[in-house]
Length: 415
Image (cartoon, rainbow, N blue to C red):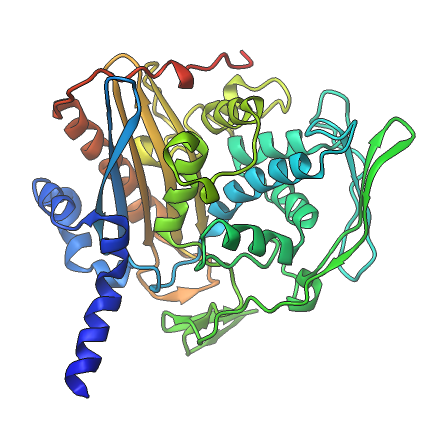
């Protein structure tokens, strides 16, 4: 019986690597070439909850991509808080929902008015950052992809509904992802199960109306999840691990799989694709990679939203970095509770380099949550910058049989 249990345990541990064909030897060896940057993290990888997924892309003669993945401590069960990375599937699912509704006059630019019917819900009838002063799915997605706007995500969460959000992802094969709450507003489970009523308007005409949706399903973790050794509750320290059982989860493998399905829909199985138009894909590519300094609507304060804002891999915090004009990063980052994440596709058009890189680590050395004392600046951002540049520099040396045609990802930006 013990032997059978041991065999089952080994199979479970290797299931992800086998299913995704992830090589687990390459990344540790590559990081070991820079001990001054990575040794401390690798020696304490469990404490940092460090995971990395790096995917090489090679093209055949017809420019079709082939993927080779390398992982470090990849797990679909080790918990990390996904923070704002959940906004990326929200954007894709909102576009897909509009297409699936297939209603004349309803598109991503249609004015979207949000009402309020339940406690803690808030309405939205205007958006001063939009050119026409009105909210829409398109404008929410711009704000999500360029600067990771929390309210914009919450409005798309309300459009999908908790059940609609999760069921749509499960049908695409993302069985381990759980997304069941808004961000930053601190609502309880009952409040997050109920989403605001919404109207799409063309002038005074209602194009589509969605009442308040109440989820009938429970998406909490089936087992308790606790991390760290304490947390702040108000001004008091509670000396017990912090609970994450009722918070979002979005595993690293599934994050990169969603990214791949948006960037390379023709290269993934049909069920994983989103129902998006060619124009939708181009729209996503543009705002995934456009810098806030290139945006006209919204117009951002450039002292706060600098060129490399939200481009952790390659640039870290990036406040004083000048971006390489030949490189574009199509990505979605996240940071909360000390967890730092980036899910990115990085392209150098001049060098013909392209790769996907997705990573997470916990920057919380004192293991106390909710104290706003996290090690992003000293641990997280330097790691992100070093890792992105390590992989990029390796890619510069990697032999490719065929030159990639990357014209699909060359975008005309707002300015």
